[in-house]
Length: 146
Image 1 (cartoon, rainbow, N blue to C red):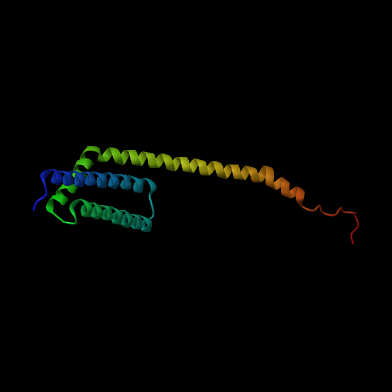
Image 2: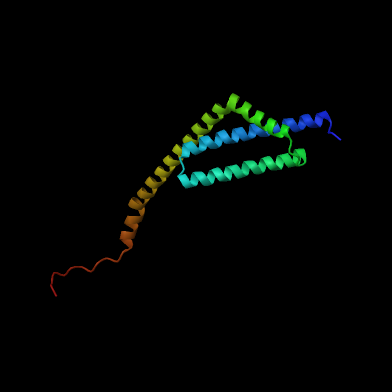
């Protein structure tokens, strides 16, 4: 028995939206990775984590929407969603994510610099004089040598 047409269209729409989601996630991750320039090992680990997460989400959605049946329309709907999103808004998502990541990194760097400067100033103006006052004074020199 075949499912009704409205159920089939609903499945296609969900899988198409999943393709759009995967494309958006891919563009954002690519921009994030370029902006942060992780080391080679870290980049490989992050690639693996993102791949496992995306494949897990796809598997769960296919299982829930299509009861685990793998059909050709699943691959077509995912690919169409992915390709259409890349064609229409892929560069926009990439550019926005890259710019936001760079802005956040600049802000974090400025805050880090300001905190280091504040800590240095507190050490110089508050703690160093306080510690110097708390030290025992050295005995006065009476002028005799022993």
